[in-house]
Amino acid sequence: MRSPWLIWSFIPGLHWLAWIQAAALTKQPRYYWFGFVYALPLLLSVWLRRVPFALLLLSWGLSLLHAHMLKRDIDRQVASIAPATSDREALMQALLHAALQHRGCLSVTQGVMETGKAFPEVEAVLQEMLASGYVFTRNNPETGVLEYVFKELL
Image 1: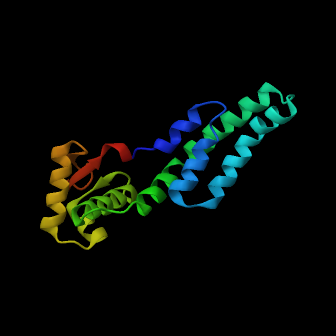
Image 2: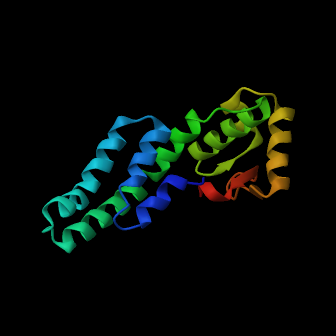
């Protein structure tokens, strides 16, 4: 999954904006608090002019680590809030969530079980995603079942 909010975490001094954007995208107030906590050393350095540079770097490093630890959860929350524009897109989103729960690999049967849609419909969408390059197929090494592998979820 793409995480545009995460880009801010790589910019020292602006790393706290990653949490503000995550809060805005997920509508989770706790992320605003994280943003405030990680911005505090910067705010103190502007106000007091005597905050050690090491404290600013520590804030940035901890924020970066924290963001990467919560990346999947935040991305999952963002994906669940984002409105699907069509039934086909809604099914794609549901298959993505199902694949996330199955460690990035999904069979047609698992897709049917998770979404409640018919076999031909699920298979058609998975084939469409395969043709677009979003997934690739392989046979499960243990069961031999054809799986659709979501590269970005591995």
